[in-house]
Amino acid sequence: MTDRHNDEARRLSRRDFFKVAGLAGAAAGGVLAACRPAEQPTTETTVPTDKMTYRDNPNTGDHVSLLGYGMMRLPTDGDYSAREDPDAELDQELINQEVDYAIAHGVNYFDTSPAYCQGRSETATGIALSRHPRDKYYIATKLSNFSPDTWPFEKGKEMFFNSLKALRVDYVDYMLLHGVGMGKDGVEEFNARYMDNGLLDWLVEQKKAGKIRNLGFSYHGDITVFDTLLEWHDAGDYHWDFVQIELNYLDWQHAKEINPRNTNAEYLYAELLKRGIPAVIMEPLLGGRLSNVPDAIVEQMKRRAPGKSVASWAFRYAGTPTGVLTVLSGMTFMEHLKDNILAYSPLVPLTSDEDSFLVDNIAPKLVALQTIPCNDCKYCTPHCPFGINIPAIFVHYNKCINEGNLIKDSADTDYKRARRAFLVGYDRSVERLRQANHCSGCRQCEGHCPQRIHIADELQRIDSFANDLRRSEPAN
Image (cartoon, rainbow, N blue to C red; front, side, top):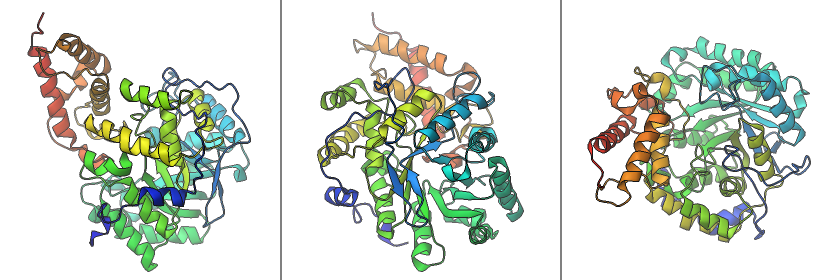
């Protein structure tokens, strides 16, 4: 490969960002975004039905809502997300109500996958959406053939038609090759999943036949795969109608700094923008990390915009650039949905000053915390032979960093309180049999991590820290 993926050589300047975004120095508005209801409740009482911001797809003319409904965190009958308990029954009645509300308030893009909610998301999504006219919504789903036993052509073909059946549709509006670049072997694995078996060529034929309206891919990890697929687009070998990338104010310039195996979002965005390929944005909140920041940063945000939630800054950032077709948000509760709709009804774009505040001031402070870049996607957990609750361990560790409960010096005056907060919180958050000390170092989970985290190394580090705390005697 050439040095096309060198972020410094290809950096999109701040001035260019706002030039292409077409911003006019708009004043900050009362925007709210989704997170758990107890953390960021909306202060609005009326959610407008006619204020949603839309973006037009240049390939098909689709008038797409800037808020996309991610069907990954669907509610269960236990009043929590299916991501928290994959075995819990989905609450179909509530899913129907939320989909009805979303459509009534302008949301028309729904994103799912055969891999979401233990394979139940597509069926639940199909039930909810089929109660509405087909021209009222766009469905996005994926060829989620992560496991080698799904790589044979017939298996991929079967997965595609099973998606149509589960979704109760004759065609898919947006079809993605799921998580390209996510595995350990980069281009080699991509070829095994989609090229050597002829599956990508078959999907192109399905597009010609009208079974797929837009064909694209979601990208994680190996930049060589991203660059290669765009080279194919440039050469006319394959045409990508859209590409799904991770974009937020932390990943814009710091994704590689946080994890050298990742790529800064400004490079990914710029490469799509110059080709006119619409971008679908995932992880605007980084799995909730950008709605749960340290108190000192919360205070900074509140001083600048007292009426806004912390999460709203991230949603506005992700929705501001031109070329962004829709921003996906996984929504569990009605409170999530209402707050997210408010965030884009209408979008109040970031000003250049607000952008600088986030990118130059807030992002470096979050990077300095050195939290583990886990988005709580839980792709890793099914592949751990010991059932370790990897995401819960990382979430607790990051929470303790944010709250100042990661003190290693026993002579520190706050050590006793921080030690207790970490250990008690660890046992409450993660069952003893699923804690980090049970990791064997087999690394079977790591190839499935979209953030390409060295999971075994991080678990060993956390276990060592926890053991040191347990053995220590806090000073009186």
